[in-house]
Length: 477
Ligand SMILES: Cc1cc2nc3c(=O)[nH]c(=O)nc-3n(C[C@H](O)[C@H](O)[C@H](O)COP(=O)(O)O)c2cc1C
Image (tube, rainbow, N blue to C red):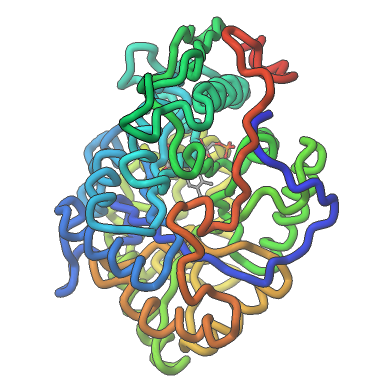
């Protein structure tokens, strides 16, 4: 395996936090209908967010990936932001207007091919001076696959087998150039040292690779590897392959449990207890006082989940129009028309038994006395990933996360573009710095340095056609 391991079997909290920004570009989480709402596609919005993040010494600027326009009941989504530019294109442009922040592209393993994607990621890594990262996802549904020649192929269970072979192959490609392969002076005899770039071959069920990689290594050796996917298979995959997990576990107790689970899996994979960093998705609603923050939150939620959005949210699970129901009334007494849920296509929640879910939700809403709107407000992922409070209060809470080693940082989704990071950078970051849990300068120029990750060690045997080390999954893929 080509990643460096810290052999320590005991997890030690670093006591430090890093921040990333997740420019979502889709979903109801981004408010598009208030005075300060900017475009989700103009480069100016990307530039403004990235440069603000860099002013706040953020480690990473993060973009998701969606391969189809999101739909609702079979129609393009009309209420929420739905489309977004290709991540690598946007990040390449950002590389030119930033100097330190990491550039994280979510890219799936299911519809890409390893030699091609490894090359594109290497390109971003080189032109950004070693700031690129790949957020590895498998994507989740046949609906996405229908857009591709191969259709909705690969069952969920096979996706990680395929992903594992994919990532192992990409790593072999990134390992295939020697250090110092390229002449460092004009007086050298040759531009490249003979044999410095090796041929990589892989023949499997889903793809073949026979390539001599077209690019040498970057200043950070290879792109940093993020992973997002929460199933047991996804977690094991992350423990074996990734540097950072973009998690869905921001609440303290849950985050601590997730940390122990990942440490256990990482040790089982033969890596050190501190080798995989964790940064949960999160949203921050902050103000000078706790009371102001609560008022702000009510305003934000009202814009994120207006009456129509609340009904639309339930429609995804009921599989039918529910326009006749009052958003401020109880959950619909009528039953879903679908067997299984299929939340707005492209948003990634599928497969719960619809009738069962409806019964459960009705009971829950009744018990808590919640209207449709209130229930949906609490139910969306934002319900549990939001930190609301005064700057100092929230800084104290985050300090507790750092002290206990619950997470290594947070990947923040701003609810307003392009000004949504301003108060975080102006107020929360200094409060964290005062508490000694946040950097006061960038540790280096590469993402790997700024996340405190070790440089991978190039494996001794990366010769042509050599099989990746002990990876049964590769043989099956
Ligand atoms: C926090 C988080 C963010 C994700 N972002 C994306 C994304 O931008 N694009 C995508 O196709 N899948 C995304 N995924 C979905 C994962 O790729 C994965 O395919 C899906 O969760 C199914 O894998 P699992 O069963 O291991 O969770 C994300 C998942 C998580 C947990």
